[in-house]
Length: 158
Image (cartoon, rainbow, N blue to C red; front, side, top):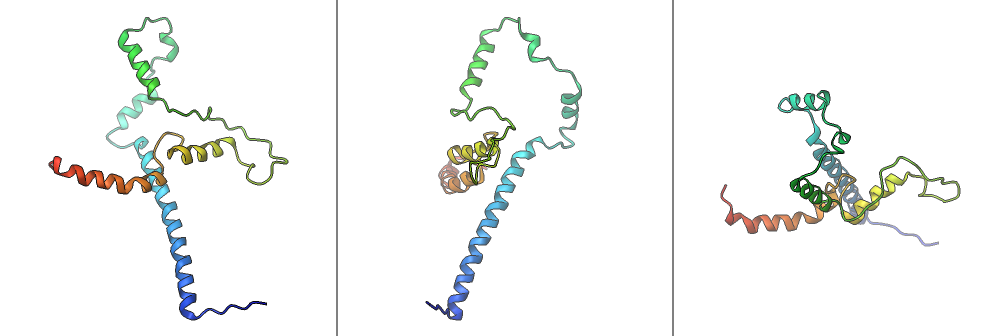
């Protein structure tokens, strides 16, 4: 039988290493939550946008079917084309709440398709289901963005 004894200094360094990785994981989880909250904040109702939100909810807008027989102008068609070009390059299917029958598929398959699709989207594109940047992308790109800001600083006054 192999016996290992750690000196107190070695034990402290192992404990410190574990504690720092645990703190980093907690910090990343907190930052992911903050990025998510930031993305949600654009839909918060404030005193400045209260009237507009009330109008949007209670004032009847034209339905998409009310313009079915209208002839579209070139400008309208160009806007539609621009919108289509702005669509994401990758299609991950329609958002559905259906789940897979996981009777014999083993561990890891007992989650909904949407959860897996969202994790794939974040891993491949670095965005969430609403095309907003995730914390991992922000963390990876922070240095490049800061360098670009430093490079651009002489050209901007303010």
